[in-house]
Image 1 (cartoon, rainbow, N blue to C red):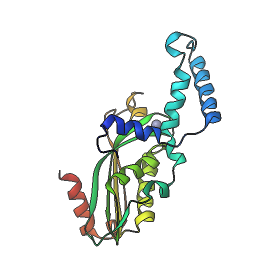
Image 2 (cartoon, rainbow, N blue to C red; image 1 turned 30 degrees about the vertical axis):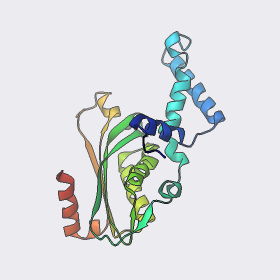
Image 3 (tube, rainbow, N blue to C red; image 1 turned 120 degrees about the horizontal axis):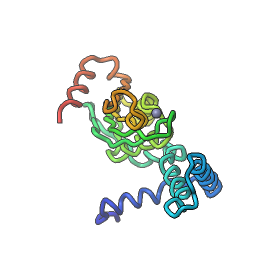
Amino acid sequence: MHNHETELEAAERRIRNIPRCGAAKLARMEESFLQLLQAIGEDPSREGLLRTPTRAARAFEFLTNGYRQSLDEVVNGAIFESDASEIILVKDIELYSLCEHHLLPFIGRAHVAYIPNGKVIGLSKVARLVDVFARRLQIQENLTVQIADALMKTLRPAGVGIVVEAKHLCMMMRGVEKQNSVMKTSCLLGTFKEDARTRSEFLSLLVGT
Ligand SMILES: [Zn+2]
């Protein structure tokens, strides 16, 4: 059905399909953004800002749509039986989230690995699973653990290894020290935690291309 879909069409379809938050909440967000504009000394009635509260509310609706998604819905129909028993690694999953301290973005990549125990999950669903937790207000440490826990719960694998690397705009834009530093967090569960060989294989897979 989506055979000839372009990247842009695919992105538009995904945006259409996100769970909406409802008119009442959208209206409250618009009102809040209007007040924010006034509070910073702007004139919300000038031409460039006329539709800004509406646009900003829509953007926040999208950026927080993880609150309105359940893990079960996301992975629904994409779990398959498998005899595979080696590390499965999905590397460089694009990640966009909002820091819960400043409501500013942090942007980076997630690397998701697991060792199946009878079940595997479709590749594209791994990225969607990351989004369910990234599209909320987050701190990177919690996001990393939540992705790991979700995978454990969904697949009951022998182990899970998650690494997230991200740059935080709240640090970069505010001129906080080490502006270009990338923050790295990891969560290792099951064999990734207990077995040194699994762990070192995982780390070497991450380094390799
Ligand atoms: Zn922050």
